[in-house]
Length: 227
Ligand code: 6GU
Image (cartoon, rainbow, N blue to C red; front, top):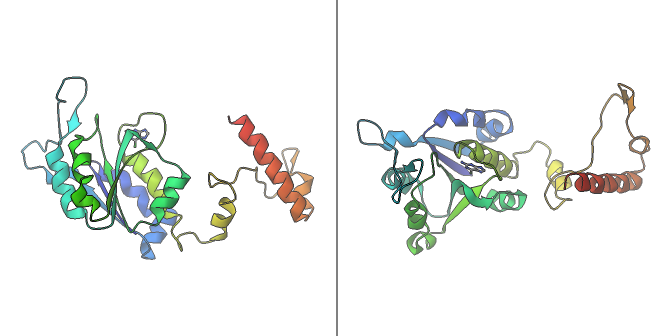
């Protein structure tokens, strides 16, 4: 999977070289390229934004700069992800769907966002015919300073679903038992007693059917508590 991230703060993507994602890149499963939006500016002040038409607070990112950077990156079969708190909420299902893409572009907006004509342009039929899909995505109901951290969250959730990225692929099949895609029951490891708290007896029983039943019940209790 090829991943392009476009940002005015390339340094935000340093963690992409670590851990699972770093390994996935050295294995050749994922190729992440980070592009500095400011490098595409042509004025002396390296301007990337301007005041909004219609007035109001904040600044809007210039479409001309974005077009200049995105044009050469957008090829056939591309998912262009525009990060915005007003986007569709990211979840495990969206991660699954994007994990089978061959090319993701993360457009990281700052300030009050990117001029909406950038979205409109790449959503046009000319691009749709080339299998270019545009997604406006948010990672949750809170406002971040920009899309960089949101992109990292998405990249981590998506790339670990690519075959070969996880050391132990059984982690994925176990996760898939839950619709949200994660384990909901509490986990325990050594020692058997820690600070006076014992590991639940059932987990030491070796009775896999009973353990599965217990975990299911625990998951339901936990889900209720987090409502
Ligand atoms: Cl994608 N961007 C920003 N700026 N804030 C967010 C977000 C994205 N998702 C949640 N909050």
